[in-house]
Amino acid sequence: MLNELTKGIFKENPLLRLILGTCPSLAVTSSLQNGLGMGIAMTFVLLCSNILVSLTRNIVPGKVRIPVFIVIIATFVTITDLSMAAFVPDLHKSLGIFIPLIVVNCIILGRAEAFASKNGPVASALDAIGMGIGYTLALSFIGSIRETLGNGTILGTSLFGPAYQPFLMFILPAGAFLTIGLMIGVMNWMENRKS
Amino acid sequence: MKQNLEIIKIGVFLMAICVIASLALALTNKTTAPLIAEQKRVAQEQAIKDVLPGAAKFDEKNLPDGSKLFIGKNSEGKMIGKATKSVRKGYSGPISIMVGVDPEYKTTGIMILEMTETPGLGAKTKDPMFTSQFKGKTADQLYLKAKDAKIGEIDAITAATISSKAVTAGVREAVEAMKNAK
View 1 (spheres, rainbow over the protein chains, first blue to last red):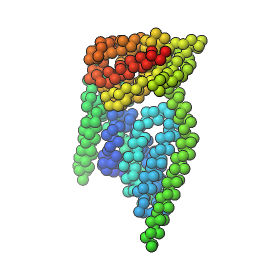
View 2 (view 1 turned 30 degrees about the vertical axis):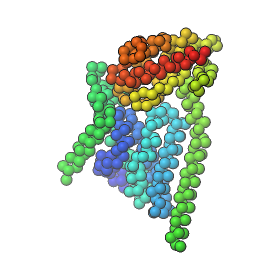
View 3 (view 1 turned 120 degrees about the vertical axis):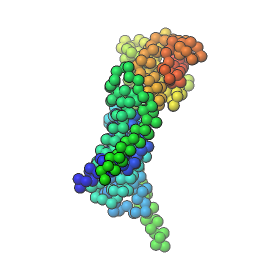
View 4 (view 1 turned 90 degrees about the horizontal axis):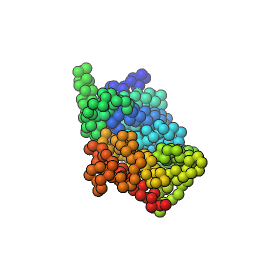
């Protein structure tokens, strides 16, 4: 049971090992705050959709399971988006653009199909939390690297003083590809060394 | 025959799922829509207050081009300035700016409401270092110091001339629109 929780953090990290959800990851990791925000919002939707998909796994006909998953996920994302805009407007303002992006995040559909549709609700919830933590950690790490190098700040606070000339490239798309590529390389190297 | 029956069964199932999802969404929308509209109104009011310091309340008027003009009054009811929103195409998308002017049509402040400019370059146009230059300028002074149609008094941001130009032009247009509306 504990394995379902921990596997998403390193061994099956959705971004760095399964290489899922790279599109939103490239787009939002220009700062630590953005990476963290996207990770948390994604974890919430993943948890809700995994539990619901798992609870309904025996009544959904196999032939139409994918459309049903998509309807469930899209409904949750919209409810999350509207409720956040109404009740926590400040948080919604800083996360606003990422919430619609969650719909296209294939990690959620991937976990619904690969895990929640075959396992019970408790295991599915643990899987969602583990995957969410793994994704959030990866995004935060990439976000910190890009923000530090590309803007000379961390969470908006200046690190090296005004004399620092930032590597602007790191907060532009090219920096995202380089950082994620290097991190995937490091993960693969560590995995190979172990075996 | 058996196959047809299965297709109908699946169709009805999908329809049921979609009906439930629509109901959930309609309910959420119904409860949140008035709250969201209120948040938007508060945010807009805050932006007007930021660009028109000292204004206590506002009268709304429609400009001929469809945009809204806000007339700011101080606590004694005296008109202290006007504000309006202008939208101008930047480097990577529209930039919307709230602009305030005093009764002599000199700018009192600007605030970038929305933009999608490049982080680290064009996005710096929303920093106080750039926006504070717009205080106390007349429409004639609202051009860049170089690289613009006329010589003005605004310093462009290095490597972000297009964004700087767009913001300056947006502010100038807003000031002129308010001037012409009197």
